[in-house]
Amino acid sequence: MKKQMITASPVTARSDDEAVVFVIGVRINKWHSVYRWLPVVRAMTPMIKELYTNKELGFLSMEMSWTLRSITLIQYWRSFDDLISYARGEKHMKAWRHFYQRAAASQAVGIYHETYTVPAGGYESIYVNMPAFGLAKAKGSAPVTKETRTAAKRMKAAQNQASR
Image (cartoon, rainbow, N blue to C red):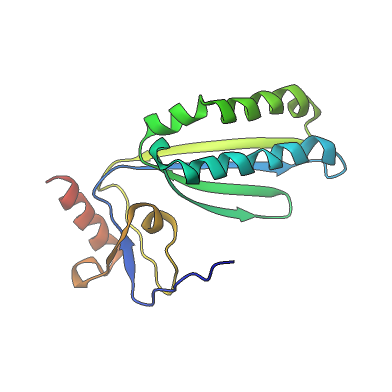
């Protein structure tokens, strides 16, 4: 595993344009039905690989977490239109059809997603003692300054920048 560089100084994500945040995941409801949920989980890998390989699709970055029952991906996209275009593409549609044909009726595995389109100036962030992460990894980072030391100041600065 590649070692990630930790940035000790506080940074914030650039907020000069829209942020599209897409949360998608799977939840294993019936552990004993491995043949139902494992193909759904495995279908994620080729799509993630495709997104990282083809930056022109509009995918910017992703964070992943898992619990005993679920895997959650938080993805950052250039635009809502790019996200929708990918969802209508071959790899995603194949995985979607497979889920409904073989897994949905069994209730062994659930899938979910949430999409948030946040306008420029509508978000703020801070990262301390972190590698590139989240919005800052997706959109780039800027140092936290006296003018952006608090959440309220970062939001105001983002709003001012967006209104220019």
